Amino acid sequence: MFVAALGYLGLADGRLPTWALFLYGAEPGMLYRRLVDGFFAGVEQGPYLGPEAPWFLGEWVAAALLVVWALGPATLGYLRFRSTDL
Image 1: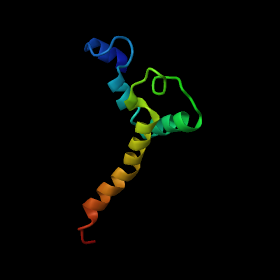
Image 2 (image 1 turned 180 degrees about the horizontal axis):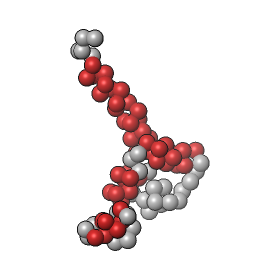
Image 3 (image 1 turned 90 degrees about the horizontal axis):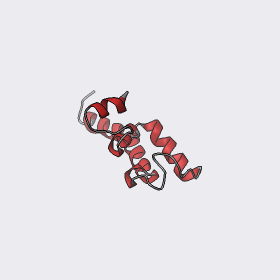
Image 4 (image 1 turned 60 degrees about the vertical axis):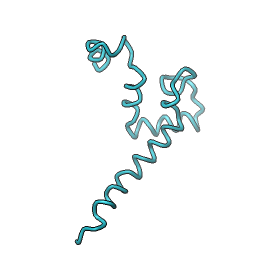
């Protein structure tokens, strides 16, 4: 459905562009799977880990984004409530 909508807008030609793969794969569950597949399972195929995949779809970027997902909300919550008087 998403690919069809992008095709209608002239942004895709039957498959997801790399920027859309990046946005789709930025979900924490997908990042974790990419991290495990890339570092521990040794998977070297698919749209994220293949040899023709862009660098920003690799396991190192997935690791960095997963850290941001883990620490980002806690940091923002701390900054928001550190000066609040409860």
